[in-house]
Each structure stands twice: as C-alpha cells, then as structure tokens.
Image (cartoon, rainbow, N blue to C red; front, side, top):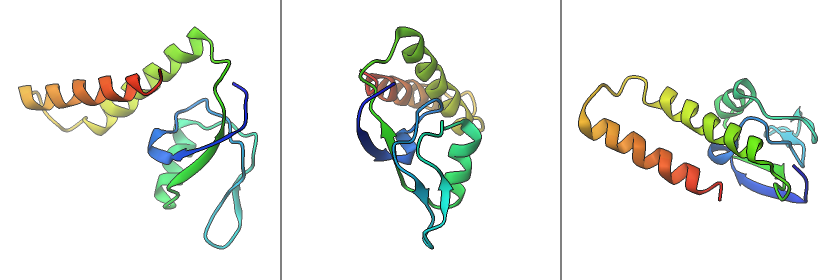
Length: 107
C-alpha cells in the first residue's frame, strides 16, 4: 500500500493498514508511530483508549490478495461483534447486510 495520508474513523481501519501519522493520546504521548502496521490487537487497544480516528497510508496499489485479506478481516471483526447474536433470521440478515456494506466500501 502506498500514497498520502488518508484519515478515517477507527471503525473502518483494518489489520494490515499502515499508519501515515503518529497516533497520540490526549496528553500528546505517541501510542503508535507512523509507519507501523495495524493489527487486530492494536485496533482493540486503540478502541479501549478512546481513539476515534487514524491516519493511514493510501491504498492505490492494493493487490487482489491484500483486498481478499481485508475482506476476511472485515468478516472476522463482524463475526466477533455478532458472536452473541444468536441464530435468529433477523440477526443473520443484519450480519449479512453489514458485511456487504463494509466490503463494498473496499471498492
């Protein structure tokens, strides 16, 4: 992935994205340095710290393998969020609608 900074809500950031800017807490302390790669664990830690937005490198040269990995990361994240939803038809349809929406955002 390459390109310029691309700020986005943390909820849209995915494992494998590279930071274009340092992530700092409310006191200015660097939590993650620019150039670092986001992981599932780091994304969870940022959510716990109340970080709402990250600045990631552009994705102009994304390969099909990278796109597939991002699609799978989205599916895993949503499955985690829906882990206690049960087997009801409405829950399944909501999961599928959210999955479709999030994956469409990848382009």
